[in-house]
Length: 168
Image (tube, rainbow, N blue to C red; front, side):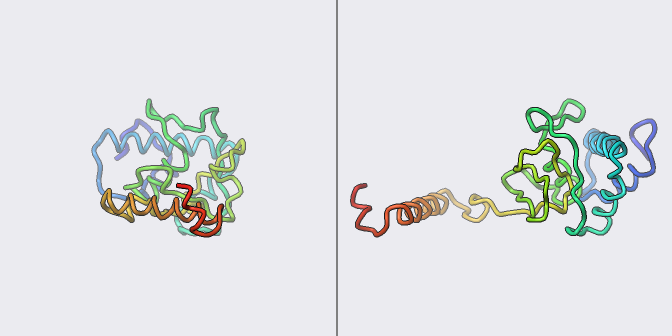
């Protein structure tokens, strides 16, 4: 049953592909509003079929699905703001996604968020999940060693041999 008074069949179909466990009613309503908002934008540009194709086939070889980029890059759905590619990637691929830093656009994506074009691709299959250093290096000490090794590598690339490191 739909939480909102009227839901288009396409919205119901798209919500049927939502990843993750059952969530509370308020979160469910927000997800429905986010999908309705996207459907409304994509109907105007004729990209709705491509979105459904991307989600149902779960295929990266689908076209970019774009919406206009806002001035601050974020999308507002019912008093909650977020980056559009993160919102829809969380909805249809990774419900535990916490940060935009966990996503990287695939090469064939022309309108990836980082390109800062007037349109932003929200195709969740045009983004891949990447490990953040804090996920890979569990403890603070391990993370500290990671950053030291990274810093050392940058120094070596920029200044040559370890003899140049005596300046430190």
